[in-house]
Image (cartoon, rainbow, N blue to C red; front, side):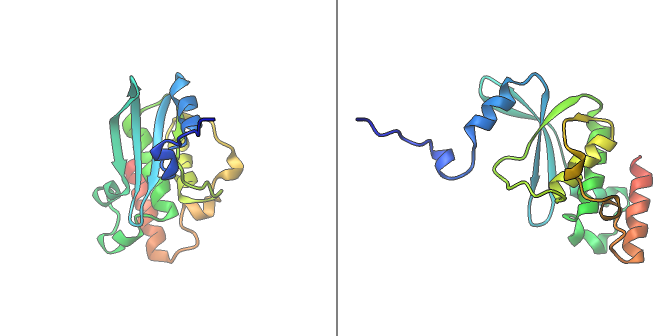
Length: 161
């Protein structure tokens, strides 16, 4: 009796091959959403012959060029920053129908990943997502933050729209 060998990337919890094959079979484009301890990254990825090619990429660092306060650069991983990065990415990529690839990250409703997805939808992209998963409008616009942060968020939103 043969023992099945588990693929290395699956063993290291880096790739879910069942999910990946479903994404690759789809005719829609694929958007990869990743977050780090400092930033949120969004990538438009095209796959040809089992190889991924990044067509467009944006990170929340781009908000600094659009009026985000340099002193608040540590907050480029926040829910409002993820939302605004999603809007900026949608403006850069344009309209279309896309699938979201969150990888092996645990999906927590109301998180930064869903804030970025909401930003892309508000920016004009067609993404199949449940509205119950998104953070509240108050969280997206930074109503829970101090007055200075709210002003910065509104200024950046006006500039990118």
